[in-house]
Image (cartoon, rainbow, N blue to C red; front, top):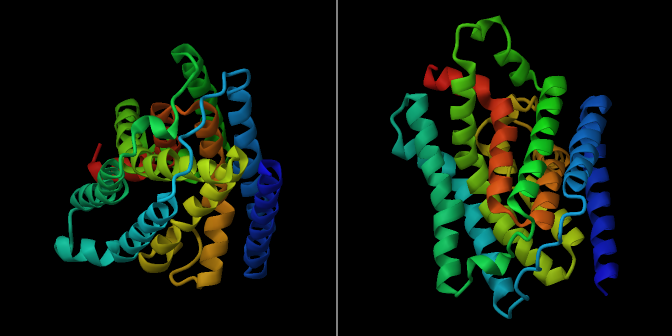
Length: 306
């Protein structure tokens, strides 16, 4: 039964992803961009993650699915959707008309920590959901460090080849900056702003519960990655992030959904694999922060004047 369910989700994920590629190509997105993202984010990085975890002892499975888990999961997902839809107006109400970008980033991060971590953690704790219910790492600390180093090199290689922001920070405009200090501070910031926020909800909670529900780590990784990708859609539709992503000022809903599935969705596969094989929350938070730090170092330096 578990194998059948896993195969079903593989086919569904494949069809959704291929449909997203079709929408992007029909909308004029260069084919090489779409295929490149798939090969690197959807194939190469998950394979590197699997290789980095080779011969690692398998962690114990998450706690079994409980009768109230379905309602709890849907309720928390609804909470996240409402937050993402209202975050823009909330920040506008809280901040002055022309806020200091440092203040904006700080308030934004605090709001995300509340919505994705503090509030769900309070609800889960009240329902007697323990930390160990998501599973615990069974690999040794040196083995986890090896996995971190392998994935860190993979992240560096991807950014060195494809990362426009990463190449920008290495250019002449930043020659006088303390890049090592800025890089470490950016890593710490992104480990909180993106790593802690997103990995707690999407991997530690959501993927673990999906694994308990389906009985399949493969299904949990695929479904979790799909939800992870879709969570990025409100930022493009409502807060102008489409310009940064090269989609224009006002991309349509279809284009936006196709884009987040074909990019952020497949990007979540590597983190899903790492969580399924290691159950090390510190590892995936640090790696997520490092991946994002490589692509956000230049804006971080500009914002904080480093």
